[in-house]
Image (tube, rainbow, N blue to C red):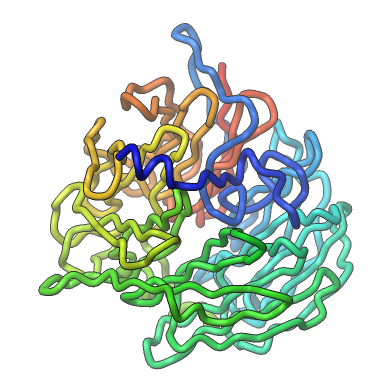
Length: 449
């Protein structure tokens, strides 16, 4: 264990000056390209005599609010698209919001999506502008939400997330649910001119993470049963044929991982991301005929597994079963806190969330467990160890709960006024508060009372 800790290289999104990104506490989904979801700004620091208060805003029908990002102090932006089953005329949009009331200050024009309905993504570039991926389009908006540039992507599919490379170029990937198809990565410069196109030899549905080592940007991407790595050098993407790992277990019906998080020189992710809900959502794009339902019957019958793959040597690969309930299912990745060497995992289908201290290969020491359903992306305040999770009681009823990551002790909870959590994000606020969204047209702010 001592040797492992001495050898691991500590690279963080929240402590680094991320070249390519605007210097805010939360300039992109998951807080940065490694998807660590750890907040650099001061924690909530909830005291025993304080509590949490939730406030919601209901959006107009047919709108799917996806994620928030911060720009300068007090500048809060919300990105979204069209809800499933509402309209065939799908489009994206961005609003700048009052950070307290959540009411819009200004709104972008409708952003074409090619008819595709998927969550997309937004980031604040180091040049100060916002870059939005939605459907088959990428848009560059200025802080006043005026369109500066537009690029229609060649792959006629919804696109799932984007990353800014260290040279300032942007990369995005389309969604391919069909295992006979191949996913396509597209690299654009900040003016949205085409730089490179890379066709994968496999399909991929989940988002991807990026780590920067020795002047190379690496992308970590999951196919249905393998995690792969691409390398980006001098404006070109290539497959790193020296690095890959299978995450199938012989005799188990599993697979279909979503995103990974990078920490302690490892990629961390969970399998069993496929369910009838996922199939319905993908079928809804571009026709809009599908209806997304959380906690729909999972496709795989195996329990959820957590996987760790070394980014130094992909043969150093291991997994463990955190809960053991059959037919497990997740719609978002785990959280790994490399400050404390703590992994937090969950099973959204059966219920179950817990934390383990990672003490080196083969050693996961249990810290705490709860029989709760969590679906949204976990978020952690680095300084206070306050972890934001879901506690889903039943369809349409859930609380945002703040736990101590070391002990699992509850520090506060609030009804956000939202419902149907579906892998969306918790985003830190500016004044002892945070934000969340849901696929069913509501956004919420939770603050210390």
